[in-house]
Image (cartoon, rainbow, N blue to C red):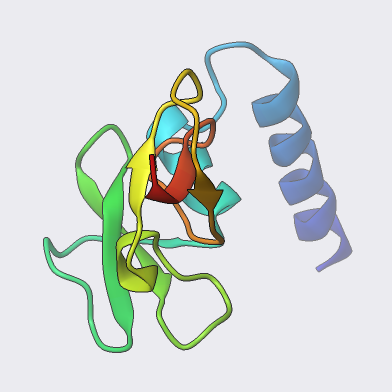
Length: 104
């Protein structure tokens, strides 16, 4: 068991250290928003779809019972960073740089 855990630690180190062996960008974004990657195209309850994972082969699902709510669930809309918000609010947007606005 000790040998197995050492091998897993070595594998994780190599995945982080060697360029090209890391997780796909969409998977990293999903995990960054505390999401989970599912094989199905739809998310089981209480999860909501939040993009893709594994280079668009899986669906990124976020837990709707947690404190992480999508911008649209909160009544806002996502805008790129160049656009000024008159009123910003808390909510997840599909792109990390984007912000959730109630009024633009």
